Length: 277
Image (cartoon, rainbow, N blue to C red; front, side):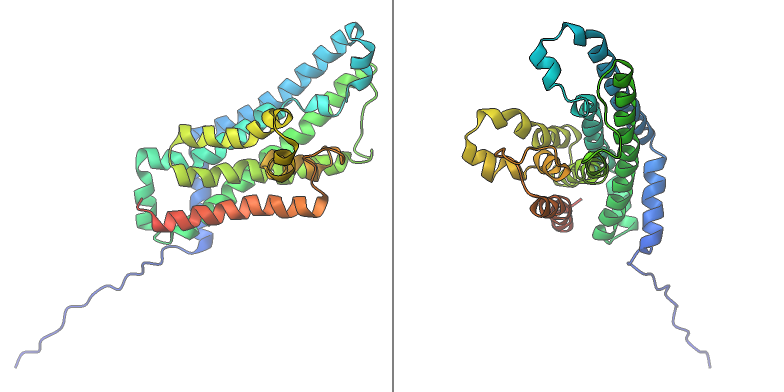
């Protein structure tokens, strides 16, 4: 008599790695990409460098300014010129963290190894957000300190961290601006998948409301523009004057910032789950 032995089958799981392993994988992936370090370095050097340059030029030319220009100059806001670079480079960071894999088709391999797409999105969002926070934690205080130091040597009345409102601006710009400028473009990249289109859309979302606000009716400013990312962060930071049409009080501003960040990620997750890679 011979016994028939049924062939054994290896049971495999389609669940993929745990979230901790996924988080480490996303960090390793972004860390190994040269563009991540290039963008980080440029954001730090260019933003702080531009603020220093503006401070030097201001100090050298202030004697030739009109009286109104001299009295109307704000040493604090005037020294945040580097936001031009840091904002745009945070946008590029958030977008390329997604589109670089779509352009090389590596995204197919990523989701083949990790079938839970929402887990991949959440882990990558946490890593990208952490990098954005780290960049902002260096650039925002760096711009402030170097600008105030340089302007102080030219006799300007400068600010310190103990002055009213200064700490609030710096904290909001580091946390809220660092996250919203990184994660909203990150979400847009999952929706559009193309680097150029996602960067263009994101820059337009952040820049156009500020540029167009003076040209648009008050109703649009009060009911649309005040809820756009850049405007709401400025309201939360206390930079937007209370009597302006784009001002939003503190609690609503916090809610709107959270909606932009969390809401954009939810939309990206829904689309990612429903759409083919």
